[in-house]
Amino acid sequence: MGQPEKKESGNKLNASRRRFLKLGLAGAGVAAAAAGGITAIKRMEGVPHDEFPLPMRDDFKRIDQRNQINVFANSKVLNEKHPERNRSFNTQLKKENPQGFKPFHFYETRSKFMTKPFRDSPGYSQLERALAIGGFSSAMQQLDGGIDRTNTGVSSWEQHMLTPNQYTFDSARQAAISIKSAARVYGALRCGITKRDQRWDYDPMYDAGIERELNWERDFPFEPKTVIVVLVEMDYHAMGSAPSWMADATVGDAYANAIKIVGQLTIFLRQLGYQAVASMNDMGVNAPYAIAAGLGEGARNGAIITPKHGPRVRISKVYTDLELVEYDKPRTFGVASFCLNCKRCADSCPSKAITFGDQSWEPNYSSDPDYTWHASRGIWKFHNDAKKCAKFWIDNDGGCGNCIASCPYNKPDFWHHRLVDAQNVIAPGPVHAFMREMDIFFGYGKVDDPERVRKFWKMGAKI
Amino acid sequence: MMDLTWYILGILTGAVAYSLYLISKKTPLNWFLWSGLIAGSSLILFSITWAVGSVLEGVPRAASMGLLLFGLSGVTILTLTARLIASQKDRTQ
Image (cartoon, rainbow over all chains, first blue to last red):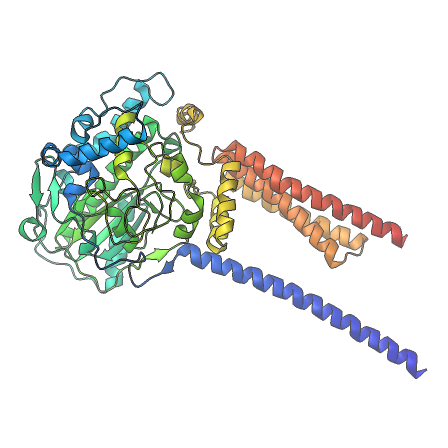
């Protein structure tokens, strides 16, 4: 009688062990899923860095604004001073396309910008031209005629409305949150605050509108301590029609919003007794300042990629003498790793200005200094040929935006894209290449698509 | 519209959970069958929400691809699981 009882209790013991094992496995599965989820959420918020996240060499030099493409193209004086730049570019263009070569001159061709006749294809009619010019009009008015101008209109260096009584914030944190709250009410999508870093400031500055060189120590009214960086969103649907003139409309509109917000922030700070100057494309390079302020990560297309909105943002900034003891930290979101494997922007670039190569210390498209005069050196990033990009704008008689529209990070703020983002930040490189293919398979990031233009013009029915 | 989708999804999820409870009352399910039922129904619910989101953002191709990839996988898993449940039932009878 003792043996069967023993066997029964042994069976019971085995069954309870099995149940325990199953429960243990289920628990481990749930714990692993939770840990994965928490890791993904943390990485989507960005991994903070104490230093600027892109490696830099000692030979890195501040950028001379006279070497900035738009400034050079807008300046008659600089074009006359550097005929070798146009010559070298034409030699390269001729080498690449001997049959279709047409001489190009940065200043002379640029001065005829947006004056060509309308085209008989969707996105290039009088309707889209009117939309684009309307989009840019406000920014042009606010900046007295040019988005690359310095010390004009809203971005004037004159400290009018400056209050003598300086407001004292309780803490650096309170100051930062107050500034960001002000940016929010003025319409900013995101705002970050970073220490002024001379590496990103043009030296010297140059205003092509009046053909004048400007110096930080000699001409600027104060010593900036802090830079407040603001992001503004561009419309997903208008940008999706790139490279049509319709995309220019949202670019121009975002410029208008961006300069409006920093103009208002400037007055806000002056009313608190701090000197401040609003800046659009002048004074300093926007992308590294936005990276330093933790708003995004440098991408293959030369723009920054932000969480949620990808590269579909415009950046503006405020220089102020308000000094904070704590600043936002730069953050990385896994973008650089994704860019290494994706290359959709390079595929969609009509002028082949965007590199298919990996990051490098200096441009690898040419070693001729007369050709690479605008390039930065000593910074580990994707180096693109900005001249070809500028040439396409002029040939297109508008802007482009293909590299923004085709980017897999450029998505509307819908839940399923955040899910894909979460997957991308924890997945290794080969998965990124697969996600790029899935993005195409699912129909995202098409460029030069007349359907997007037709769709855009129906959207007004919804408001 | 997406808010309404979440509301309907909540009702659907409740209905699926109750159906699974009823199935488990009628037929004893092992971990493998439970996994099949949960994975299959989750994929179908996911594909519906994905499709609605994609249509709302104006990318119908993403909606159809989502239905094809996630929805079809869900239906396949549910079908296989249902056949396993049926064969298990036959064996016990």
